[in-house]
Image (cartoon, rainbow, N blue to C red; front, side, top):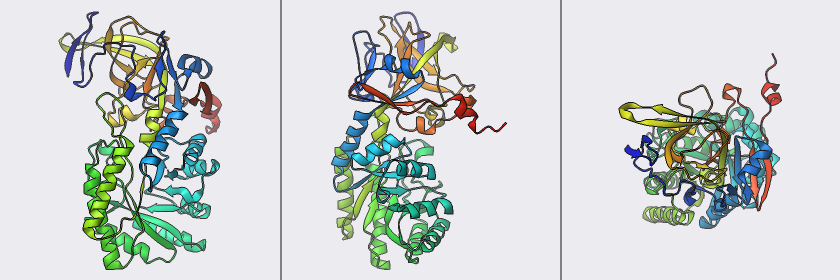
Length: 462
């Protein structure tokens, strides 16, 4: 931590990566949609829409989704990974409008629950272009997916292989499947979002032999069509070194199945987990560089093994929707809290919090923010933006420089909240989940409305 004394006399501590801005009103372009800007009055605009004007109609907190940015990011992955199947990971954020955008941009869609499948089908997504994940799919969920014609189901346990085989047999069809494997690679990320190390709930271990056993079990069922292996090493990953190690182990199993079991799997899914910039400490790679490096890893390993390159797929979610959305809050109170050794911290309380963004509390995630409703000439102070819930861990932004005159009624916008903000939102403290407002070319439209008290009470039969 580094000490900081503001021109106004404020004393506090900040992370080593956080630098006091020369202009506290300025945006950091890497954290915002390309359309985001501030006018001469300091008012934030996204997609050609004034954020204060937008929230005057829908109130706060509100998620603002830049449709143009979403589509541009989807196109960037589609074009960079030409020849791959690109599955948008719906768990990051999914609604009917987003599912339609995904289909219109030529991407496939990955779902991991019956509810997500419902949204995808409602949006008219071709079921053949849907992949279905999950570590505990029920017989009912599998039956619906198979009946709908879902293109592939990623099996995650021995029980599920048998369950799915029975369902497909009863429906008189053959279901395409992939076997999710764990390659023993732990991505450099939070423990809860690293998914390829051995001690976790997803997939079959390659090193223990469980993955090979699962492959053999699938091949034993005439009602299942084994398309390939699926490997996902984690989330918020910034380099391809993890894919290099995982790819080597997964492709070795792929080759073994062909040579020893006589079954050539035509596909391989490398998962997603591509990182985005939440703060200035993050430096994500462009899709074109990711595609170049990952393709080189796979083709090189296939050449070394003497096998053909299978048809590849990836599953970006956060990398598409994350930077396309920001959350806008209204400031309610500001207080300065004395810390040890003469330091203090300014707490800025807003009208949302962990009910609309649990990631800071759950993953110790870092975010940035900006004053969105006006310009300020006050010197910057180191602040912590917190929510209104009855938890001391209800923190939205742990550390950020904001104008020293920030006060009640000001709007604060947090960028890069598209992934796992609204999708993990809750009714904690009986909060009403915020709306999602899509903006593009100066127009705004609500694609997910704000919950009402009637919604809140609809399931409470009293």
